Length: 386
Image 1 (tube, rainbow, N blue to C red):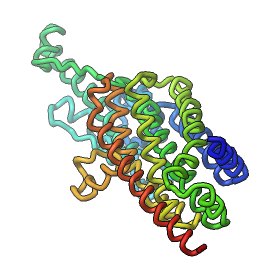
Image 2 (cartoon, helix red, strand yellow):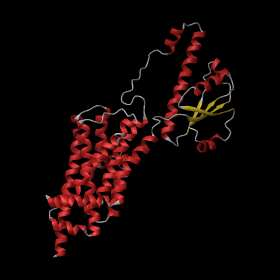
Image 3 (spheres, one colour):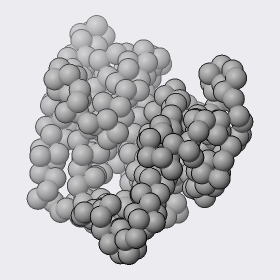
Image 4 (cartoon, rainbow, N blue to C red):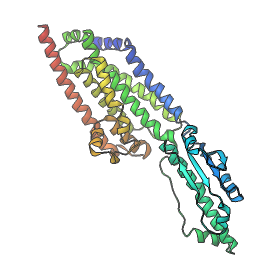
């Protein structure tokens, strides 16, 4: 035990002497967490610039323009009588949409000729386009209903009867789970999980690879020749560091006013299993690839697309089956699936049993592979020394 404690202390010293590990493990989660949190702090897109081509210049077209001015999401950047070179301007000026009110718009309304308002959406940014589309439709449908009801009233119908004649039934939307559409509540928890997985990957990728490069591995096997002993020595510092980093990262949730229940037993299990599974994958790469640079580069191949493949933003059911199947073996996929069940939907341990089983299986398989691969390296090293 004294020898084990001595090696653990030496491991702490080697970790703190490695500037790369220190920067990645302690700096990245805090820096990226704050940066991403402030990026999405506004919570939803506001003031999307639009251009209105008013070819009618009538009280009716003015009413349409006023309605768009009253919408908080849309910003009327310009009103002009002719389109001109608007198609060339749109990508450079960043207009989300161009709305064209045709000539004789008011006259056609009065004569029931159903004039058409044209909306050209800039689909270069899907999020902006979808947000603009929803709000433009909301404004135009509200105007459409108001004009129709006013017409029925002019025909002599009472306001209540006119409203019912236009709207034979009512629609009531009840938004559940992030009802305000807060984007920071949607994105930040997933990004934090991705950051922590990547940080653990990269930190663990260096633990054995560095020993192979600088010859420290020979000293280790002189102390003990069993792979499980050395895995325990290498894991101990990180088993102490990682909970501290999770605690720091978790404080970003209340800091950015995200409504998510994260301090409960189910979340503790998810976080622990994600950490262990990520440690085992990182350590396996470190054992199999005795080069720090190559080990980290190959782990980046896994961690870089992990967030996209996780199904957190784009559903796995919409992915090709082969890709969706591969994504199941990335710890982040299981963690984010369980996170949503617990933090957003209020589920407990029973709700995340599939994710628990997957994470446990990933960690166990990688752990066994580490023991076998490391034991082979120890035997080969001893044979070479002999």
